Image 1 (tube, helix red, strand yellow):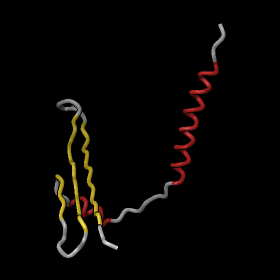
Image 2 (image 1 turned 30 degrees about the horizontal axis):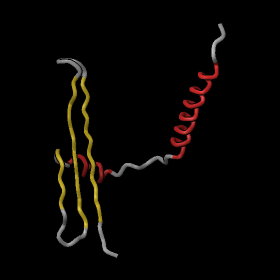
Image 3 (image 1 turned 30 degrees about the vertical axis):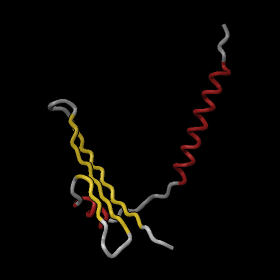
Image 4 (image 1 turned 180 degrees about the vertical axis):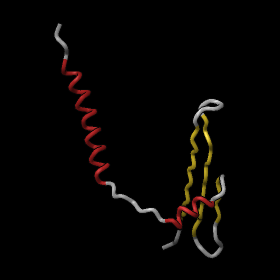
Length: 94
């Protein structure tokens, strides 16, 4: 009994194209830098969501922090999730 290679080749071509696109995208990403002032500001942020709008500016500032410890089992290994985001939206009439 012959093995049909045409369907396998189509699937391999699809996954190969996705892998090639991912590799090309990864090569284009420039390494970033770490600014210690920003790291300190993110560490000092309170947990939850907040937003405020300064009176003298046409902008809205927002911040969010989600921090949890997840443990696998009662005495098992665990890990901490600390997701922090800062944002700013400026609206101006031109």
